Image (cartoon, rainbow, N blue to C red):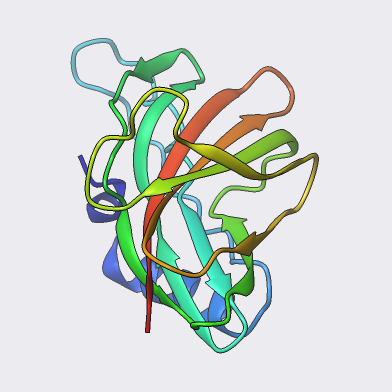
Length: 164
């Protein structure tokens, strides 16, 4: 399921335009409406992760597995949302559509176009707080695992890196 289709196109356009300028994305809260069956407001939307780099991007990643505010889904390794990077690589930065604290993150790559073999994905970055990673040259699937603060949960996002 592509989470991007859940956002109004205007909100997505504003998010991508802001990230392209290097600024953190704007927060556009969606109005909470009660669900007819329970009368409870729906859970907040999962954050969208947008990968950008100087002179390129921004591209929202494909959402994989997540455990977020009491909801969850399990997903296999995904091919990823295509993004074209320079042949010399670049420093990529990921912005989230929700103002969540990132307690930890890790990024791995495996050859693009297929499920990776056991032990094949290799870590290319990890940290706490802002997500910045050196993007490798070649054709790769980038997997980004993010742990959100305050017990909110975690999510995994995917991009297919290619030379442009």
